[in-house]
Length: 416
Image (cartoon, rainbow, N blue to C red; front, side):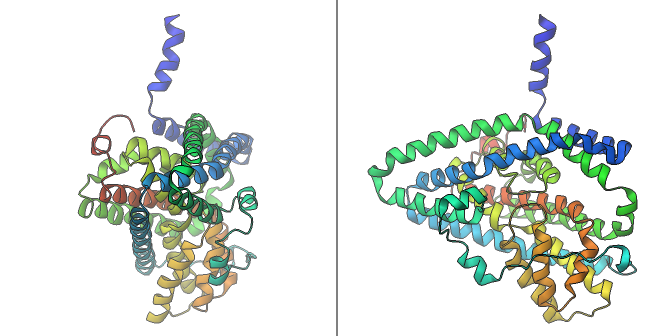
């Protein structure tokens, strides 16, 4: 009797991030040993991803409405929104500059064989006008059915502001959303209990699909992207937390491990949103009001990892085709890459489409995208992890500035 009850207790005592990392390592090993046969584990990953996707729309909608109505003060909402967007734009600009510097130093495109991958057709990238017009949903229910996060966010913000402005008449509806949001948090915990097994299935499939024959020819560009991503997190994010927030950056890194592992394996910042919200509130001590507002916005417009990728990929393509870029071209890469990353949906592979905007602006052939398309999934995992880390860093800073960061929780060295 004692033996049977001790096993579940032991499992529960293991931190979730340790379980997930174990699943990730075992998945990589299984894929390396079994090759393409490791795809038999893919259904585990599919179930996990479907569970995460199931959470996205109701969680984003309910938490945004609760976050806005919980502020009670339109001026506070405007202040939080301005700080959030400002920080996201600043870190995105830093990100693309780091990508450009890394690509300039290490020259990933020099000596690469442009014929190693066929050109890939890409969908037409939306114009800036189309993105702005598309923010407002003509049918909110259709936006929810289609999973259009930008439109859902706009509708949720509008509804939240309206409920806040009508005062007591809106309280019954607000209470319903508060209960619904709590239910979604509990459902998130249930889905996350399956995360170690889902991550195992995802990584076994990816590891089995991409062997050394595919990775070695483009190992340099992979290394440059990963290096730039690591530098951005360890220098920019921890630097802002230390200098601006006066916070211990090590606690931030410890507190976001769960979200980083899920984002790395799923390559979806929107899909990682439920885990990010959980990390922000439980591990970092950010209030529900701030995290419920800042994180959904960040999952949509904050794409630092995508910006790094676009900077590295643009120079990679330029070096690949022997094009000499001017300072004006570098400036256009920074500007266009920042704007394009804001319009990039938080789903796997969207950065490849938005890269076409950057290449078109500086006159590089769009066909060259096909060269990096074969390893885009590998790059996507790294840039998504940076996106999620940036969302959580900005959420922490905004929470600290609004005095809605529980320092006791943040500085706790308990289980992450």
